[in-house]
Image (cartoon, rainbow, N blue to C red):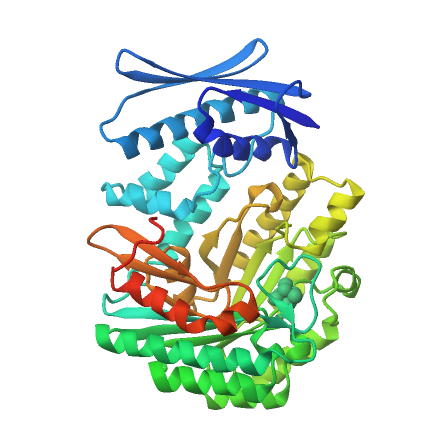
Length: 488
Ligand code: SF4
């Protein structure tokens, strides 16, 4: 299907395209003569903006007062145009996307914005429903999350969280788009760890200079346990020596086929408090289809081994809408996970990003995702919400990414009191994150100026190894406020 959008306000085209995808899935945009042609006219009249969206005879208009300030004006125009487009497409297609007109924004942020204006949680929830047409179920989910984050959302001002990226994995899954390569012959692992240790030392010196303490540590990837135990031990030993243990320390063990007694013993000895063992699905057929190169049996074995080694805070990741899986298949996975009783469960929605094999496969076969695919995925997420909350789990963080089926969400659930501090601070952007390794992004919050600066490391492993000091210097300048990289 092709769609043509004509707008007299080019800078907001991408945002309008995102709203269109909510209704039409992977539609192809053309500049002339599509199957559907939409027109957007932005106008200014008597102190008001008007956004008119039309398709043939059908049109929707949204007017707003012109606020003071350039930034606020841009925000108001964008929101009004997206709302008018959303209402028009709802009328034309009869579809009701569960997140309403919200695209590309963390929905919890809108809750917190409303609460900053003095609204209660209930009033904030009502505003999200009324102004952005978010479904009662999703708005209720936001309220539960905000309640689960109470007391954990704002970390001490003199703290930061640590992130270390290990860009290696055992093999590559079809949907993987991370800055990750297979360990292969391991040629790059040792020089990578050497470079990482240098970067960690430089970061620790900076934190000492600023008098900041690590609150939470997180080692992600890739799959950190895909590299040899001794190399991972070098990283963890250096991190704890330089930054201490903090209140929690997570290592994504992720792929069950990389978990061995030797690695678990080492993680425990180095005081890692939380690990993840990720089934993604409890169907061997699906695992084969997505190229994960391990079986459900491997997952069960790794999970019980982790319990034997004393891990009492384990996360399990699942993915909704994996290729070939329907609601029944997803339901079987959910039941199995709940019966294992991990301390947390993260339910992802499949995101088919351009860097993945799956994207290429879908492109070659001409497969596109439709609105009804999105509805099916949303049923899986609703089932996850009811099954997990019915089994004592609480949703405690949520985020959305581009390229997700139906522009839906990823939600972190946990047993009460098992919220991962790193996940909350990072997702809500309320905590400074000092990040190390190829492709990692440090996020530094300057509360007085209400701004966040980001410092991104190079993604390519070889370039990262040869230019580590340059990245340490860049990070230092940004954190000390000597450079301005990207304003939030
Ligand atoms: S386990 Fe994770 S990091 Fe490794 S290939 Fe699969 S998706 Fe990518």
